[in-house]
Image 1: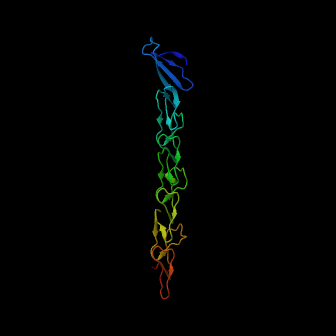
Image 2: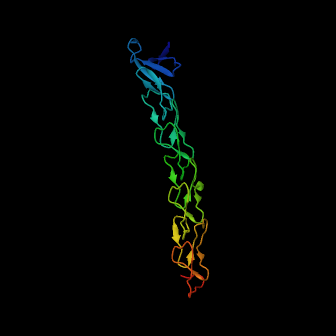
Image 3: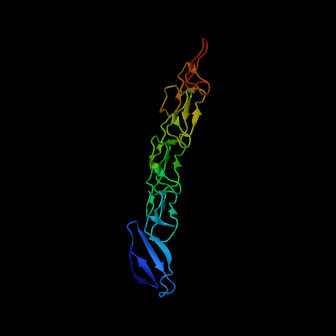
Length: 219
């Protein structure tokens, strides 16, 4: 580019199409044959020994400068190549530092916007899809089922048990009560009817033998 004229004791060239401006300065205007050269690069670029280069994905430059590097995007944000700023990851996703994109949260997890990690659903809850935002998308397990932390699905309680109040595990039926194998969504153990009995954790009640009897809830 052609020199435009003196500028604070030196000379400034035109800004090139590549986003480069060469600042040519001399400590003494009359010694115009001795210049130092400083390369000023546009937003989204950084200076090299031969000109300007585009910032890599995951980095940015938010102002025209002579910096020889671009700043990394922080965790929870991302950028494409040549960016002048980083963009926040949306809810349901996350990113690490210097990321070129955001990653969906796994099943059993969620996140808010600009997150550096996903959060697990609490025990007793589940989340069956990827990329969900907000704790409100962790759903309470139904009666007769339970879950551990970060669950994608709830697990059925086994025969002879029912889920506890917060669905974090299963509790055995007491003697004289039972829970059949098809007791999904059942919140209580059934009472053994008269003439039958059961021990603890029973799936069915057994008939009393000849010469014996029982009342309801017999053990």
